Amino acid sequence: MNSAAKDAAKWFAKAALQGHANAQLFLGEMHANGNGVPKNEKVAVAMYRQAAEQNIVQAQFNLGVMYYEGRGVAKDDKEAAVWFRNAAEQGLGEAQFNLGTMYLQGHGVPKDDKEAMTWFRKAADQGYAIAQFNLGRMYANGNGVPKDDNEAVAWYRKAAEQGNAIGQLKLGSMYSEGRGVPKDENAAIEWYRKAADQGVAAAQFNLGLMYSVGNAVPKDEKEALKWFRKAAEQGVANAQFLLGMEYAIGNVVTKDNVLAYMWINLAAGDGNENAQSLRDKLEKVMTRSEIEKAQEMCREWVAKHAK
Image (tube, rainbow, N blue to C red; front, side, top):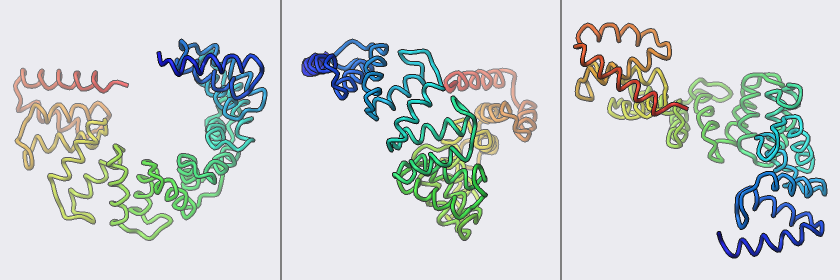
């Protein structure tokens, strides 16, 4: 254990006993993380509470998190909402976002889309990217506000420009569909690529589709397959089906019925009817041992990717 951290914890403990609120906050964080002291979430909660009751905004937020996650205290969404509200009313963006999320989901407070919008907007106005994304989504869907694609695009863009990956995906979709902006496939692919590079499966699949047909980019089946594979590995059924199709046909990769069956069977398991039909056709040209091998590969993939 770091000696400097141990010394800091000792002095924070002395100050905390004298009622110093920031020392109580810092000591709580050290107990929550096991930094300089043995990890003890119950002590962390006690320290956060003492600081929170002295109106320390970060302690109020931290205490809300502990109640929301059930760490060091019984999980209690209502109590979490109380402390998030205290911190949110002091202007903490994270707390405003969390309180908005609780109103959106009806956790600890009555479900109320308008109230969720209020708190998301407060956080978004402070530059909190995920709140900006949520505002965009609510305008796009008409939740808590009249549906407004122009507003949706504006908020998606704010989130996307801060690197929010789902905001980038949604902004790409708005350009692709011409919603709230003129239809622009070049802009769509730019934003899809940004999101895909951050690992967003839907963006990876969309990029694959655009390369497969030459939409806003030169047609490139190898590049399409690269993005379909990335999306397939994340469980996108349509990508799994198209990857399986490629192994069944063998245009870009070496034809391989076992790999084709594996990917198509995974897609079929998610209800893709085309995959179910193609799987049945593959079975007619495969040996029993090939089918069994493919099925075992499916089971291994599912076990590896189980959440």
